[in-house]
Image (cartoon, rainbow, N blue to C red; front, side):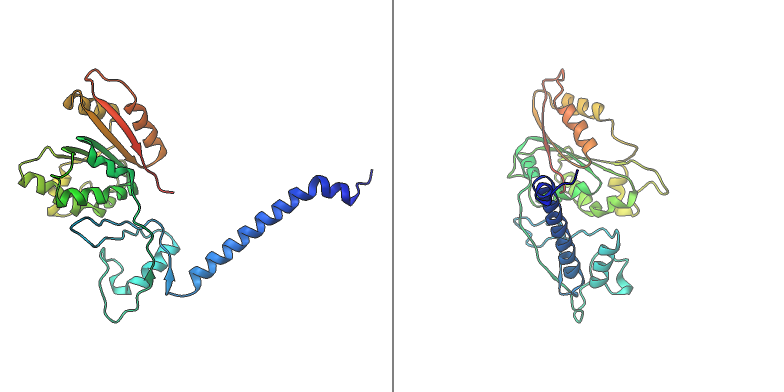
Length: 271
């Protein structure tokens, strides 16, 4: 039986019209992004740049991992070929750098880690970046804050990833040892995959090499040790990493223990 165009329009037309509008918007978004990307070195956009300013430090660092053609092209805009293995951008007077537009600053749930007497901060890979401002703040001056003990756990797949903040962690460790507060910060680094050298290269990283473990953390044992050492207190748990890691820590935070220690769970993730 033939179907009239009026009947088809009433039954199927709206669906096809919505689909056409959706496809058109996606094509428009694609071309807009493509044109912005290819219009030259003057305008470029970075997603989730890392700022580490504090009250006594007005500057901040940008950590960019070179993965794929977008980041490779951005690196080429910033660095001359002779400096592309450099970890820090050299300032070259005659070079025309692209303009960078920065959104923010934005608050973070991890700021609350300074308002607990004891905090457990867990990072998975690049998830360490939200903690950088907290670590810099403690490096400047820890006394104004409630925090008196920080457990900092960082899990990475490859050894080189630890070098992103190795200098900062070493300075923080040395600061509290010099101030006779070695128990203020407990740093534990876990290398989940073993391939090649098993230490962070450099004599200045000796303090971190002694805190580097092979494999993944035994989370239940870790929570039990923290609960036992901090009987009857409240521990703020802060996590930024894969969902599987977040679920594990959330579950452990909700479990009761025989030491009267309470764990309060917080989470942040990259969009």
